[in-house]
Image 1 (cartoon, rainbow, N blue to C red):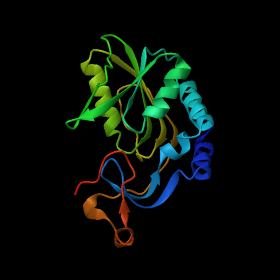
Image 2: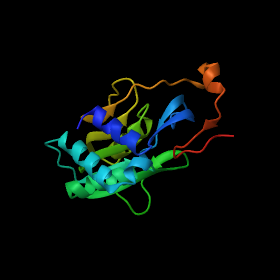
Image 3: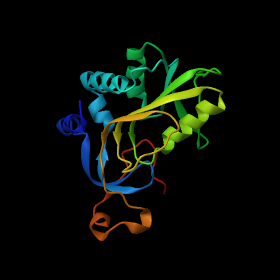
Length: 192
């Protein structure tokens, strides 16, 4: 499976959106990947998970972790296929943390999975949490990388598709994009 195959599945399932979106990173874009729309189909979640695992042939994690909310469905299937524990980190008071009785033990090998990245910020926060707990991040697997650059996570990193998308900072939004009503379909709320 290559980038074209992945993007075709996103198109077929209506998971590639066009409009004016505020990404989780705070950047504005005329394009949005709504991974939940594609991952609602088990055959695609299973396929994407299998493809990510294939890109890490020597991976032997003790636990798979995903940032909430977007990566949970994908991370759970990756963990199922690897036969290991699967947890997620979520924000509490603005910081990534483990809740709901989840834990990571010192020395464990941890595979971080996410559905889509733009700046990699949530993944970086999860990696920092893993390290703070004395565990080892052994890889980062992502379905869609829309960062337009190579992010250094400090461990092996693989994505199924790299997509160059147009992104703008708040003070750089062109008039044609400002004319489109803004929406924020991600898991973080719009600030008033």
